[in-house]
Length: 364
Image (cartoon, rainbow, N blue to C red; front, side, top):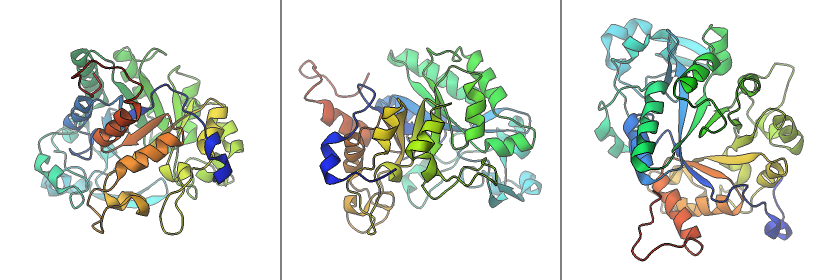
């Protein structure tokens, strides 16, 4: 992955799709506690193309939607004395964590917990919804998406991220079997389904590539980090996987990549973005799609040249970041604030999209 020179600006890769997708990251998580059914529904009402959800697994083998295995920040478990004995410390993906872990709960136990906002300091308005919902299973999310698709007369896609796959393999709770079973139960196991399977780990994706015809997407973290599943004698970083040689290896099993936005729009020493890297073009040369993550509206998450004022939790110019990513040719933007990304999408395509007088801009 290299940064483009100014002479190459006009030679940027075009998107592989007619209209790049707006994907709701854990639902409309800028407006509702993440990974709740209402967060997903809110995003669908806004008009997103797809929702993105992370999957972990319970002690009795049921897939549920949580950002990670440890749940003290996203549920009320810390205040539940009946589960105090389950608090523990363990190392997952090389990181030591202390708290409560999904794999220590049965689904029945997990269903007694209430969901909470993960970043209450940054998104205090979301805390008004704390306790309103529980933790949804993958089955429940798929049923809701199916119902909303029928209600709105359009198919809403699902981008599934498998979390901690190697760790779950090591404790006898592999994610791929229940994943494929749940998808088959909803008739979403064929190439016609609007479902993509993603992971930061390469092993689970290479395994699934031989078992499903659904698109497989290799997620890429910041350049200096490493996939948790690579062996000790494989020193490759995500930056190495984002190189032309790394992309050629990914192309052997995957249909696309999901890079951290810094791999597409590198920041300079001051934290500002300028010209894009060649990653999108390099990926598109192999017909790999590119869905970039995670675009958020608060200043603390934006490049310094797109921030408004000095308050870290104030909203900045997220539309400007979306515009830069679309200019770089990405095929999808994964975001906590889909309404802003959709607004930029509409502005961008207004001159090319015929519509009757008075028609609304929201996607159906």
